[in-house]
Length: 553
Image (spheres, rainbow, N blue to C red):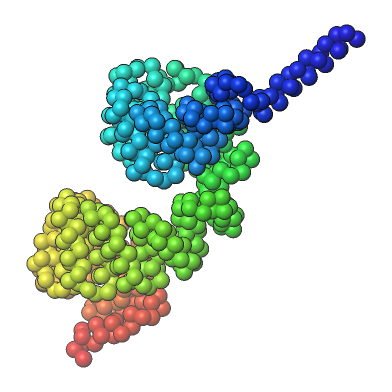
């Protein structure tokens, strides 16, 4: 009985202590109350520490360390406005406290105030150039902003000062990953893991490097380790789903995203990525539901808008896809990919001028990307604006003179302008740059046929066939040219080859019929003409005109 009473009294004492920890009684010395809060912060208990900091500052509003520590607690508890106010109050009395400057800089960054963030982080390093925490903090921020070189310099400096700093190894490893230096990144992250082997985040990051290298087995093993070390985190399951996705194991990837959502129903990446996977599986309704959920959680998660637009594209719902990209264009006016996708959608809707406007905006944003100019030139070709198309292809050539594509396309535009010598020169250059591609040879042969350089044209078609013995257009154009030089037997062989490769090629029957007509094989010729028109009735006017020409009508 006595024992039971003692235990009960012990429980009451513990409960009383717990109440005091949450609702501290005013102490005569504010520093004592503050110290109690600092002790709880050292135990990773900011929620328990906060009332002590409040009480200490109530007792002495001039106790500056109270603002420092309360700001830390508030920041950890995501009270960003309160933390900012406390840090600013503290820094007004101690402007060179690099630790608080780093904390406030991170807070500014989280709020999107990047100028203020960088100013604080730069000051933190300026006041204490050898303070590793400041160097790592600034490096992490620079890396987030895409300044990989600046971040790497900070991490290198930090490691020169302290070669046992795990955060610096993580930072440098992440920078090396961004530079695709996978082996070096793995080395850094492995060192960070050796220093802090129970931190699941480090395994997660190393898994991402393995995934980037294509070593999916190692990546999945690291994701599993991260999940084991941090069983409440959804992140390892999202990354696991991504890796499985890359391997085409969609059922398993969906299960991983399901688990991530179960652990954290507000994980926007899990919803987005599951929606994207369902799009690939053509489960469009489920995909849209997931993407809508991602946007409900974070209305500014732009990747979900892009994925939703892709669903509409897959469904050929061009109007809704365009509307989605238009939303993105307003919110992200510097996103090249958005304008390129909207241009493609507008092309699908036969809106060439609007597509050109989008390609023009993309070209402003990425002036050294020749592919954008090629696409815009292609649309201008569709509009028969040959001069503008030539200008685009010429600009693309100025950016990259080693690519065959702009020469090939410009040659075609020159053909339409009947500038034959320029066309031939560009086809020559395209073939020189890409000698295994038969298309430049075929097109060059067509120009030579137009210029009545028949034997040279036949040679180009023959060389194209040597490169690709199933290239239908090479056989067809060679047959046409052989017909013109009255080598009918050889022409018939080529037309037969075309028909064997593509039985639905209407003009192959038309061409064979013409040769048979010229050889007075009227019944066979008429059968070929009938077959050609059965396959494609729209060729009748051109076929009739060709026959009338041959008959001298």
